[in-house]
Image 1 (tube, rainbow, N blue to C red):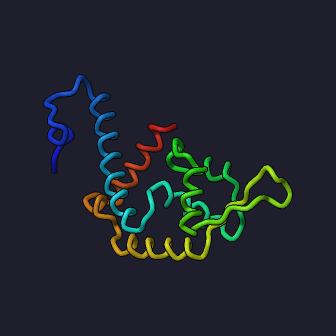
Image 2: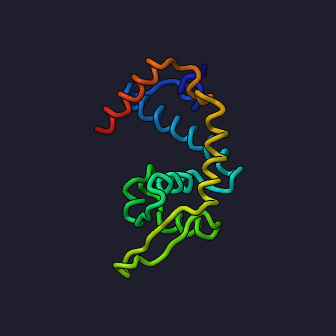
Length: 152
């Protein structure tokens, strides 16, 4: 197991807080790169996958863009652009709301649902995911508690 110092070839950090910040950012980037490679094989991005999962969670009900934006993992993503790319791939539909012409209803299509089923099947084959296989359930619970504490 390589330490963060070995990974980024830095001998020492000014303090434990900076080391932890760097380690979290490095690990986050590492995970994102792995997921990007995985989702690329399905022709979508990690952010598009997130949108599809949000829509599946509300299916068969339509979702407005603002609802997608507030539920996204990556709050800096451009939800409008993501939805349009998914629409072009026939994974979602967009249509004007019957009650308010200023609102747009977004739904996942059958093709979108099938794609998520395919991805889920592959992801569920490896439980736990390789990057968590070295951790015990207790360590995972502790990690989740720590991450929640950092954000709150």
